[in-house]
Length: 513
Ligand SMILES: [Zn+2]
Image 1 (cartoon, rainbow, N blue to C red):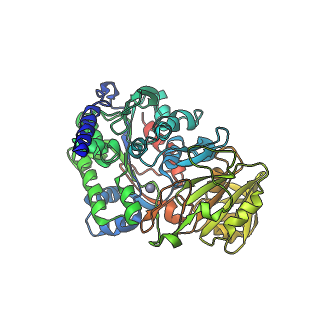
Image 2 (image 1 turned 180 degrees about the vertical axis):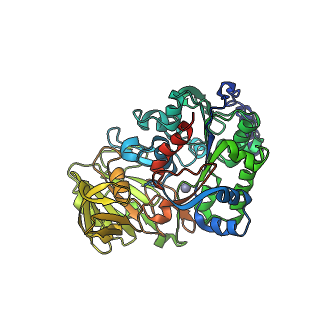
Image 3 (image 1 turned 135 degrees about the vertical axis):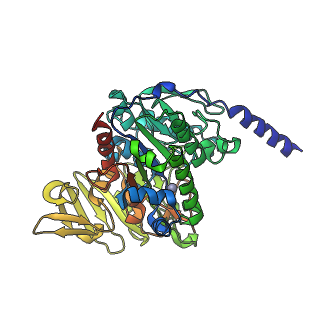
């Protein structure tokens, strides 16, 4: 009986809270035709090329196939290391890597505050567990404190040009208007966001069906996202730029280790709903540019936890790792695990980091260890013992026109170096030199970076694991290469990298505006 009462109380609580983040639609975002097409960017979290490409060929995905046929498609867009959504979205919106935008991972250790920053894997789980600090990090500090204020986001840049924008369920959303987030059990939180701003049931305009307002993830889910995009289209209120995030596929990818055909079909059906809302699909492309993309890939993790998961507390024994909520004088190390990568920080002045690195080298499941040494970046491959070091310099030019000095064994990063032409190409680790350089300079403190080989993940300071499922975070192309569809324009970004999408998007909107 007590249980029933508790359930009833919870139900009433949810019912009352269900409307608390509901806002009137900001009608002033309606824009006159400026001559340039409006841009709709849809991020499908953890969308990968298989079985997407074969299902398109089999005509099982009409919306994806339409976008591919009417536009262009790649399954080799290079994402951002560490391959975690908050890092990738920060790069997408600012056009910079983490060394400039200041969001190093889903988890990172703040050496000045001596505490682990965790943006939360899902806002609802953070709140359920009573982790107010995690909720504050994910909802507020990520956008208003940590994301570099000196780098304008796409939303801020377009606002300064008088062009309104919309952000629907994106975790990184910073814009130029003050909005209020309504979080159950907390005082209202002021945040800076675009004119049309949806973040689950914390701030929304449409009352999607009751269950979707809460599950999954308190309204940060595909149904709520698509209902808001439909609301904008049907009310002819689409601003110049809209970003919509679809998180549901990521959950399945972690659990199953694949994109299942059923779920890809569901995503396609939601895209069909969006295209239908314009009347005909051809009409949708007449006045709009559609960009539909994944954000990270993932690696399948072996079923046997003992083999596939590296527990960092065991790896670093007898050293003591700080608990996520507090660091004590007895702690030796802090670890910030981002699934298949981790930042490792010494907490004691007298700790010999060379010895700590030696502990890591003993585990052949570790793919590489990266350390900043003055202006050099040192990369080690534990199994072979081979090493490479590099720094910004003029000796070699990579395929993205970035220039470097390099010494050591190029196979550590699977580089293809043409010593005669002084050129560098990439193999298993796309844009590896800049990606590692950026992560190694992403925040203050003395730390090293470890990544796992495909099939393996790490566990530390209570980070979640997915044996038998899938996970991402590393620099390997399994995690780093993603599909992208662009339809409604023939223009292309400067390179096929997420870091180069911001100027591409702004260019689409500036061309005739
Ligand atoms: Zn994920």
